[in-house]
Image 1 (cartoon, rainbow, N blue to C red):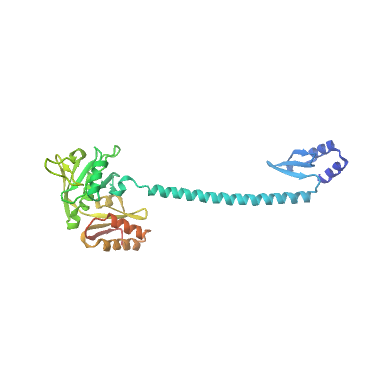
Image 2: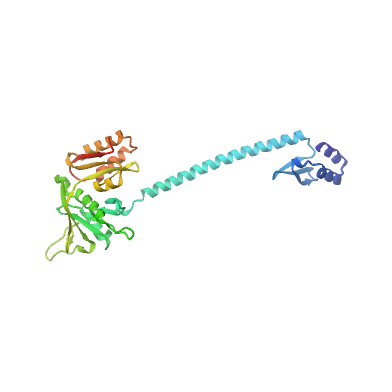
Length: 313
């Protein structure tokens, strides 16, 4: 077709050229989209791909040009794909950064001692007198329940009320064990202690005339609801490649593996090393430094003993 086209072009019979091309072009090679007589080019639509052929050149030369165009475009496509991959990597990095930032954003209660009960109710305790003060005065709501161990040197603990999850007896007992374990009873080596709970409106900073309440101290008015002989026992559990310290009763209901601690004669430093070695021995993926920091911060004051290894060797 191209050879015959050359002859017609040489004769400058343009109308005949058009008729010849339209009538002679094989259907299996697509359809003629346009004939550019000025530039002596023909545009072919082959499977929705536009191909430009030069009527002055033979088929070999046209194929060579097409090959070079394809090669050039292929290289461009490869570069574009590489660029897309680079952009995707950057987007992924930004997503990871955003995710990390979200995780690093702490909820208000994370500066306190805290855990979620087996019923998924939030329990928060003060670490010291200053936190006891802020917890009761600023964070406790009217429908919350307040707990305190029956000993001087106890955290105030708040069970946060939730419309969708009423506070149950189990929630109260789990919070009571948490309160007992972080009281001075642990340092004294007690095995158990009484804990009482009251409603928020029974807790006041107003003291009787002539008396003064120090920071972190409050008056309790009305009846106290006692939970007798609450055992001092905390569980260390692994979650999200780090550890949490929660009440024994909570761990038994929520976790398959846990290490139970009770008051004892071993130092905090010694027991932390023991816990880390247990986790490593059981092939737990942990950050040793992070876990050490978490345990130093979240274990109570006093001595320790490992009471039980549940599903740990």
